[in-house]
Length: 435
Ligand SMILES: *Cc1c(COP(=O)(O)O)cnc(C)c1O
Image (cartoon, rainbow, N blue to C red):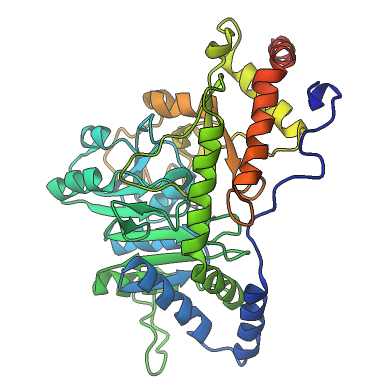
């Protein structure tokens, strides 16, 4: 019997290990940073070590550690020379920060629909959204799978746009042999505790090949000032914020980064093992991994397909919610992520921005911008049908291994195959209560 109907949970007492994995090396790194960090000074050695290590890992010569991925992306948008009213293309299905970093520069996010196979921005849909105000494209490596950066680069080169990589969900993955973080002219990555490279708390990394962009991004990071100089002159050259990373978070991330290559291999193997184990289980589509890139499964996204169980007469949403309830009750964390495309969020739909309609109404943007999620049918379909495993609650990272993945598969097999009648009954009850 399904656990949601009173049966015993399949993973009772045998659930996955949480993410991130904390080892003695990480504890020592944080304690060492504690001892080195007084008196307060900037930049701190631990922070410059993290920056140097990410530069080496990505091959991007200029790196700045920031206090969030959102901050790192804002630095990239500003360093791209994006000005008020300029337009930046952003995938319709992503986390808010990939788009709000554009608003932070008083510029206008313009959304692009999703590729149904990879869940990343569809390179074929970029050109139709380009205007004479477009300056940049933000390409997100969603779920842990790099976007099609060569196809994107071909478009951005043709139109003189800056390609910015949002690497927040895919540290450790590769595209055509190149590491995530190095795939655009600049990249911003999150080190939030849940991410595949984790600061445990909060953090971010900005990277570029260009010295001038590095200088601009550093001004944004520290009050608009020119730093570090011999003596600080307290003269803001431009708008800047305080985006400095916490030193203890930097120490933890630095320590984790030394293990990122091996952790990424474990993640790839785990995701592949789960996909193999779920082959032939009806009602769900497992993730697609093109031959030319690797997937590190920050999320393991499933698309629900009730049609495969003959449930064409019931709403997809009822099946999705019933499946999620049943799987969670068995002890496997699964959830909805981003229930709608970003342009459907109130901030965009009602064009609230900074209030009084800014930046859309500030006089610098071209008139006529509007946001309607229905213009992104693939992203809407993905948001309707998507459930995700992964992140911290059903992690694909070590110490979880292929035996853990076997247990994940057992839960889905129990719910979708062995106890299918129970799931169908739960779907009908869910649909009835929504009426
Ligand atoms: C997490 C995330 C961010 C934001 O990072 P924070 O460190 O939480 O500010 C940006 N983009 C994507 C795709 C993310 O997943």
